[in-house]
Image 1 (cartoon, rainbow, N blue to C red):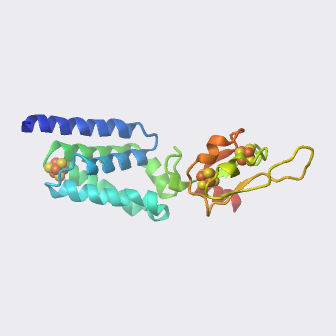
Image 2: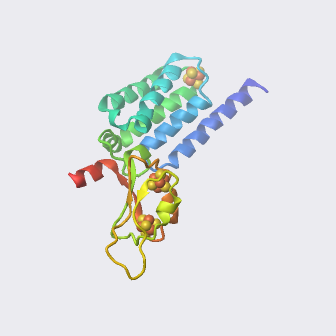
Image 3: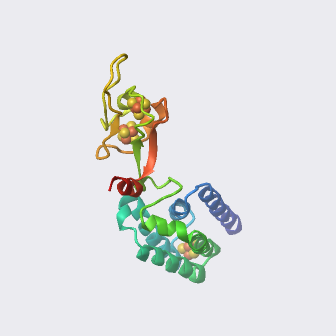
Length: 204
Ligand code: SF4
Ligand code: SF4
Ligand code: SF4
């Protein structure tokens, strides 16, 4: 296979990654997906601005997944610097295009990134910033969610006909692994994904 054909395949792969990243609603998830897929595929490691830059970007972006509270303004500034360095100093088009993607998305979605620093994902795609919660007004106490949960994370007493005094079911957040299986079985749509930060503000 010629060098030219190999290059075309890699360029195409980068375009595919970009297209798939754009399918996400959350700007943060777009850039995280792009960087992780670039690191796993087209990034060849032959130059420092690109190889070190994408590795550091991946570490900083993954904070939202692993330690959401530690993602800070300093991470945002570092991402901007990485994007600019990659755009200016990468050896090949793949690195420069990836730098451009980072720079453009940070510029076009600045407000959304600032919200993530505050712990809010308005697109509801950053699962570490969200939690499942039962809307008490919609819960009919059927117990389907509790039966479906493999982690014993839902408490409540199933309602019996002609008896009263039942309380809505509740999710114990400490046990919930956010698998979403309870959502699929709830007949009334009572189980919702809500922002952890918003929930804390409401409960204050
Ligand atoms: S810019 Fe190109 S050559 Fe440099 S590490 Fe990235 S993919 Fe490899
Ligand atoms: S499945 Fe839905 S309606 Fe039934 S107990 Fe659970 S939250 Fe309430
Ligand atoms: S999201 Fe998964 S772990 Fe959490 S309460 Fe629902 S079924 Fe249980």
